[in-house]
Image (cartoon, rainbow, N blue to C red; front, top):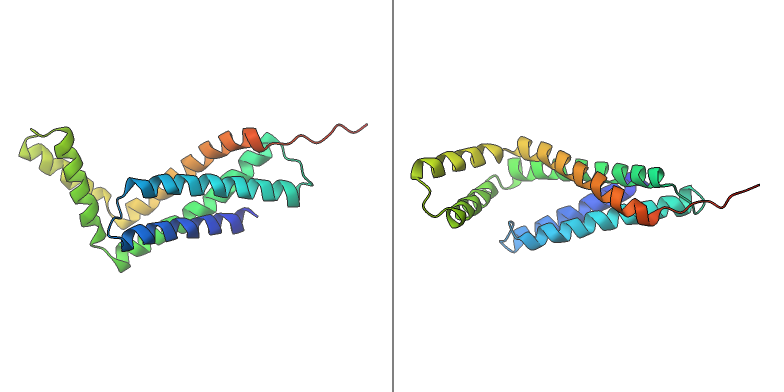
Amino acid sequence: MALTNGLLTGFVLILISLVFYLLNDPTNQIATYISYVVIIAGIVWSTLAWRRDGLGGYITYGQAVGIGSYTILFTALISAVYIFVFMQFIDPGVKDIFIAQAEEQILTRTPDIPDEQLDAALALTERMFNPLILAISTLFTYGLLGVLFSLITSAFLKKKAPESF
């Protein structure tokens, strides 16, 4: 259940990423918000399916957190592989778009930043946009978000079994 729903959620996230990439707007913040909604929907869908099909209609808070976390683990794995392959082989130049956006944000926040500091910040940003580093950070970020979202959604999705005598 978690594997199937996690992979499905990951593929939907990849599709969102590709759509915004093809629209020449891979850094659009709306894509991030849509991704959060997809992650939450994936957790909820997986938890409800497990509650219905695997546990006879009932699920504890801990079980719900567990299935949600496992679901996002698989989502994170497929997303990390996609990011690595995309940035390493498909379009290595996409990192230039992200670096340009970072430079724009720095200049917007601190317009009078000395050139040396700007160059140092951009050099650090460029080192961080290594495909392997981005893949690993995706694993951790999605993992953390998945656990956080699972903790929240589980409070609403838990369903206690009736007491039996």
